Image (cartoon, rainbow, N blue to C red; front, top):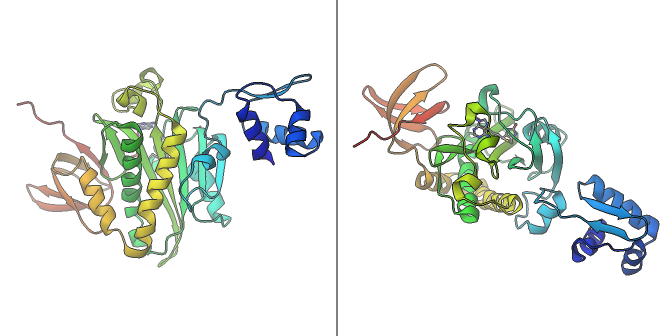
Length: 326
Ligand code: BT5
């Protein structure tokens, strides 16, 4: 009933509709209409109530409300349950709680703002209100915990595809968890896992996508390294369209992975990579070195040719050296 009332309000595009008309059209009592309107307001819809004229839906500025996402969603597993927060500490934290409580695979958490958005190794993630997609997806894959690191590569492939389809901004994947546009970071991915020795309980894939952030929005420490899709493409991007495309692309890559493994993801990753073929500086947990990134292996590890021989990096930070001037 709530969505039927929402449809009536949308249909009247910002004009008032009386409670009586709604109750007559949908054959419910006026008290029920009033209760559902209150529920819609709690869901985040901007509805004006006038004692004589009735209710009017004010323009919704591309907010990531569950009913709006569902209306555009083409994925079947991802997004079947959506938890929305106007503000939260971290969508990965919310997803972790839901996963521990047994939420179904494909549960999605999305927030307009995060106050303690997280990167890897307790780094922060800048997540301003309404200008990005701060998103976590809960997966319950049947494969071994050893395979989990490749979920980051899988998410990067899906997000990069969605970005290029929706915005046309030419982005590429930087190993292991970034998407870059014009050499600047536009997406970061944080994969977290709960597992036993030989089985995964759940994986949370957290994705932070800078969508409509303006240059002056970024804090000073990110001004030289970060960008947004609006900056890179020169126009505002619909967060709803991008979010639903990301979920569809992620499902498209995840379902075959479940049955046939990561082979095709790794091939797609290679073709979208901006790391391969580049001179890179690697900062691992216990060592640092420089070399040319030549490939990834079946585990998703980066293979680097150095003066001392071939190095294999499964986790760490990689920065690409700018090309030397001719
Ligand atoms: C990441 O870590 O890139 C993973 C970021 C994942 C964020 C998402 S948002 C939804 C979900 N909920 C969470 O709490 N997290 C996930 P890392 O590779 O460690 O990079 C972190 C570094 O990126 C920081 O130290 C900053 O230098 C930089 N950074 C922070 N915010 C940024 C932003 N909005 N855009 C670009 N760079 C940023």
